[in-house]
Length: 115
Image 1 (cartoon, rainbow, N blue to C red):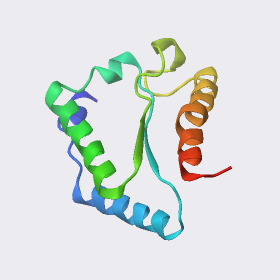
Image 2 (image 1 turned 180 degrees about the horizontal axis):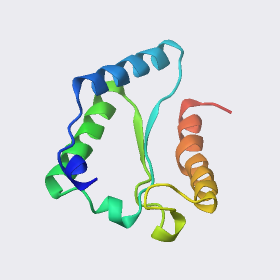
Image 3 (image 1 turned 90 degrees about the horizontal axis):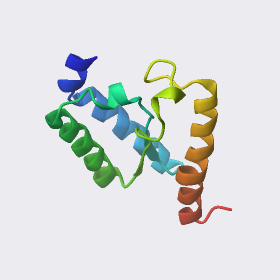
């Protein structure tokens, strides 16, 4: 994974797909949030500083361009919550879902005025 992560750049097809998705959501009045999924420590350590900066810059650009939120869950769990560093075990997935609802989805809905 290391070479792929360190050389990662958003391709034009990535941006087009996201722009189309955001447009469709806006058309239907759907609130959008980007979710950066949990990662084990080995995966969090893969990108070098330049790659981390590219990834974080791209997320910031998406937020600015599309007015969406980002929920950064990359460091929410210790390694023992994962099967292999990037797939949560059932117990980790259940904790992730509960935390995502409490810390990500509910605040977005409240800010939007949903009941």
